[in-house]
Structures are given as C-alpha cells and as structure tokens.
Image (cartoon, rainbow, N blue to C red):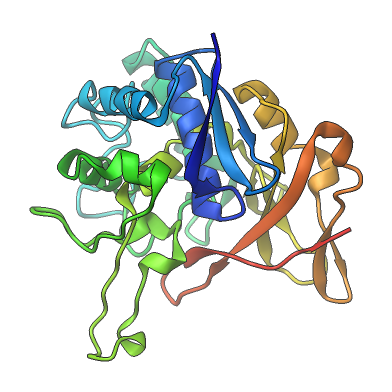
Length: 323
C-alpha cells in the first residue's frame, strides 16, 4: 500500500528544498522502496512522498538506516569508500582530469565497482564534453568548488554532519534548524546549495562571519545529483534544469513543481521537458506554464548562483516571469 506523506519543510519553490525532495525520492527508490513517488501540494508547494511508509517518522527511520549502513569512510551510500577520491593536496580534484584521461578514469571505476553505481555517479559529477581554461573536465553546475576543493568534500561533509547530529534528518523534513558547526567538524556552509548558510562578516554586527547550514537538507540535496543529467551545449557544461539566458550570457536553474505522483524516471522526463526552456522578455527570464499544465505542473521556480571571486557562488532563489 502506498501512503502520501507531506514533508512540510521541503518547499519546492526553494532550490535547497526542491533538491532535498529529489534526494528523498532517489534514496528511498534506490535503497528502500522501489515504488516511491514524489509530488507537490498545489496549495503550499511542499513535497509529498508516496511510498510504503505511513508517516514522517518511518521515512526518517529509513533514511537513517541508509546513513547507518554506509561505511564511515564512504562519502556516498552504495559506492566504494574511495569515491569520489580525496584531494591528495596537490593538483586539484582527482576527478577533474584532462579530457583525454576521462575515459580511462571511467573504465577504472567500472573495473573497481561491479554494481556500476560509482560509474553512474562519475557521469553525474564531471563531463569531458566541456573543459575549463586548464583543459580539465568541468564539474556539474550543482557544485561550486573553490580553489583546490575536491568533489569528495561536497558529499562527505554533509554526510558526516548528519551522522553527528542525529535529529538532522527529521529537521530536514519537518522544520529546518540552522547549525554553524558540530564537534570535530569544520563550519557548515551548505555546500553552495543554500545562500542563507553564508553570513559574511560585513552582514554581522560584530564583524564576524557565521556560516549556518541545514545539514540534513544539504545532505539530501547532494543525493539528488544522479537524477540531474550532466551534459554540454558544445561550448560549455550544463545539466538538467540549467539554462543559459539568451542574450545575457548567464545561467539560471529553472524547475517545475507537479501535482501527479511521479517515480524517478517520470521525474527525470518532466524536468527535461523542452517547454521549461526560458525566454528573455524585456530583460526578464520568462517560462510558459501554459504548455506544462497538461503534464500536471502547478508552478515554475528559478534560482541562480551568487557569483564570488573564487567560485561560482551560492545557489539562491531568483524571480522568473510565468506566462
């Protein structure tokens, strides 16, 4: 029997809330209940999970079971402990190899992991279809690494925070609680998926920077990435829900919220629907809800990165005109 369970903290109009909802859908589908579905409340835009779990507590227990069954040395459930590889301290992220070395890296992952999960994650994290100014494979726009930061940190840090703060998973689904740090763990910054996690010194009365993240929601959001196909336009990398605004040279993340319960495959198909592609009308990003309503779409939301000097910046909601 399938039960619809409302997750009041996961507002689908917020990029972190939406990605966290996708993360719940994927984790339950792949590790717990293959028939899990996702929809959104047409009144509140909050996520609804349809699965064999009758309430939030049993969903939290299932998610907690996935965490507890994951090796303490691992960064991602269900893949080898050494994926993604750690930064050795020189040369940058080991996954961001030169284009000519990408296939060899993929073959090695296939040989090391018979489940194929590491290979699938690899394709969701970096692409050889676009390279940076150093000729290295580009990472997904869902990450915004700075300096020598490796992709492993993006996954390992939120997972460790969830381990050290057991209420984090329930808080992620019911009511967000912001935390700046946990014992034996660096400050929590939201992994560039949450602009509210970064509180710069200039914004604080005492002049001190105080990052403050929602560890459970951040971890769930990182778990959504295999649902978000990474590819390229031929000149630059892109991914599901990301679009370059015509004539503006900037990228924007745009996604729909939907009423009918969808599984992971239907969700991916809807997120990649060509009708979501925006136009720019009078310098304003514009998307057509009219063309998507027959698919059960109830609204469209958008976000963009707040560019920083040394990274692409944090992901933040942005306005979009809906026609």
